[in-house]
Image (cartoon, rainbow, N blue to C red; front, side, top):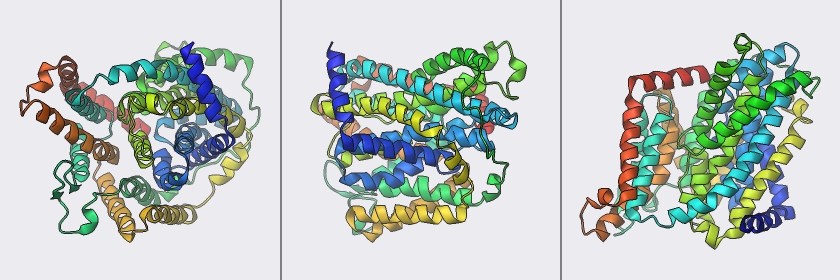
Length: 502
């Protein structure tokens, strides 16, 4: 009964005119970004983040969430139509989706993606509403030692799900934590790593780091590969409703993909990517038509797309209950919470119930809007695919710089975008993924704060981390995750997955 009352509060908040409007804008922008290869939800949320700072907190978060799961859906459109995924987790959809399009079944493939996404998003939203409150109550019992161990576990698990070697991912996390320590000491106020630059006393601006790493760096990388867009675009899409046989074959993959995505979405790093590939592997293994996979099997579209979108919804669980981002987009959401004066974590459900439940309710509204928007707008998305990068990307960079500058009217923030953009590009060229760096940058201060608080409370006794049961269990899991990440079999599997994705 309490759950129904909370959901009623959420829908009364989410259905306010301005919240529905910005939810619509969010899913529309997210889908458009997902359709355009090479930009992705992380870069888009990073570049649009400054726009939302003048909104009410719940409105800003609803819009940003809509951008995220809209992009998760939109990536399937370009994967199916031109065999070029707009989002990394849609890479596996291209294997069978584009083959279906070449056979004149693009409509069925797009419908399978839309139906699977809607069902998975709806189920995952219910799972989020049911699971979040009890997890938040458990999290309220965490002290500094438990939070330190939990943050450490999250950072180490993200290594397993990042591209490149485990050593490179660990180095990116360490670099991110170091960037997070720039500025004044959180306890003493002593300047650290500021090199006598007054602008660094407050540390690096989160938006500058995010826009540079995921906006400018990705744009520079994609400008090198303009020729990869020169594929055959399926310009006409017919028969948007799947046949009876297609519908029968979709049911199982959608249900299994939803379950896998809901479970794997909470993992730090790239749970949505892992969910898509796991779903595809499961469907191929259990199918009686294994020879069709890679040649136009509708199960290869319905399963991964369901897993992808379920994971997009449940990735909010660690953010809303523990205050920990599961991946870079959630790290950006942490920034949005903090800018609006809200500390993400278990207290949100108590202190801001309208925001908490309004955000959850808006996800179901957003999934309805995605279905109503995207199938009729397929022709628009096809035309967008023909926009030259040379026209599109300079405009994106310009708006990102204007948005960042408008935060504090400080030119130094724009210089920081350039610095982190170049750094991110160099890291990408060296085979390093910037995502762990951003997670380290966001979680580094939290890691340091809880480490020092725990040591202060225990009067310098480091055994507090292993004598408290929950902390000890989390540290054991962190060590186990680190060992698993460097195992040869796991390392080869990670390399195979990300090679297939590219």
